[in-house]
Length: 203
Image (cartoon, rainbow, N blue to C red; front, side, top):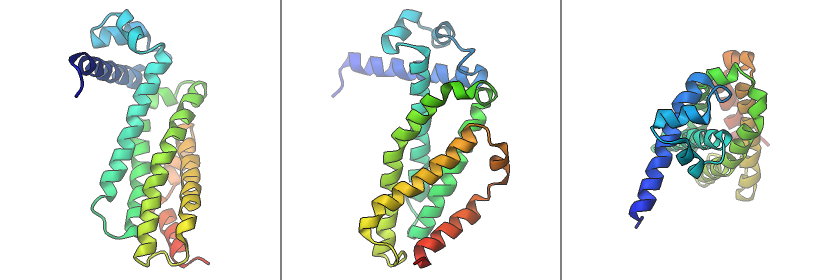
């Protein structure tokens, strides 16, 4: 059981992240200061530095929260789907819809010097890889067990899942770092259908 102090500290972190999230969405990371965050959360700046060493650390915590929300949305979207192929499709579609939604929230950042913060985005992307790969592996295992994916073996699920996520993260990067054409023209459902057919019938 958590102590009273631990609960209080956790609540304070949540308050800081929520306050910073609003400011980053409205003004971007460059124009938001630790003073701004302190005022928004109603705490002294020294309190912020007790929990986070810098504004970048706060931003990292905010983006980590956003990443966790995407993962939870993906899990929720596939939870009640019986068919492995449909789960794969839901995984892709939900992932990209959630990412585009998050990027719309942070449009002010995208119109700023986004490349300045690429390392932070890539760090979060790397950390999300393992959880996404585990979700995909379970879907592939189910597809093999149910006879949907007859042309792949269980031993290949790790490498296939990793390959899928490398492709997905490459598309993520294009969305995050400014490919307007991709956001407008990417026909995700059609691309996913082709990919699933490859798993089912490819040699």
